[in-house]
Length: 178
Image (cartoon, rainbow, N blue to C red):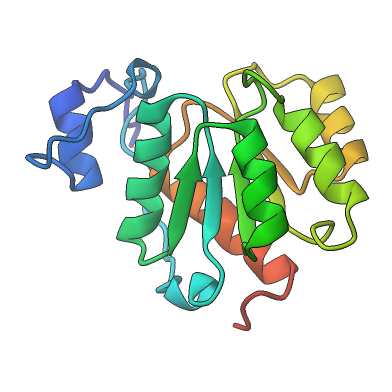
């Protein structure tokens, strides 16, 4: 059997994410020509961030809120910021279990954030997942890996893909034991 993808409306996407009627707004980039994500079997991930939250650094407030909603619905503790400078301050002053960051930002871009975090003894072990609207390009992904990024995803992303990436990175860094 073949399932053909179709375009979803914003209302349908809100319903699929379980946030219809909450006043949530979806960024335009999320509504794409794809069907619903494949079902995943993710366990309750709340133990992953019980002590240290996931920091989401995204200059688009709608995208930031969307990532927070996705991760919070999986019982993950999050905090968010739209500022690259604030991202560095939070990472240096409060323990975070993972940084999910956009690459293209005003002030300080994601690559600069990555370099500064890796250069600091106190922050060098924070797993970093880049989520970018820049089309995947092997050179850019290799550059991110060379700088020490742990993951790279291209927008738009499905909630299940984000959750899987987050779970994988936290498990790799020993933040959670299966």
